[in-house]
Length: 144
Image (cartoon, rainbow, N blue to C red):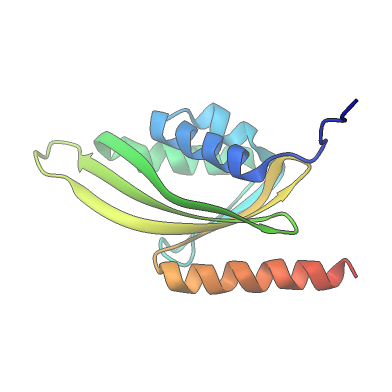
């Protein structure tokens, strides 16, 4: 008889978070966060948000500026030690506009017990990848 793993599939959880963002389901998205999670958008957007309520308000305010919004995952990688790196294309049409804007952003998430403990958002994908790899290695060494 095989035992099922009790370790959460972080890639699948990250995919669920991205799908929630794509659907504008901020209740679901923030339910995937620890109650005191930190969402660090300072690398691209200048602010850091602490706690589910603050994160949800920021996301709602951000999305309110757009009539249409799409989040397309390009890459999701579990780097080990609770660190997940993802890259997404965000395509949106600002309120009152006929044109779309598009950006490619990367996120570095630390997951604990199946919930996001900390998320850092980067406009520079290469910088985010280096930070994610370094963080995964630091967390591995801390566990030794």
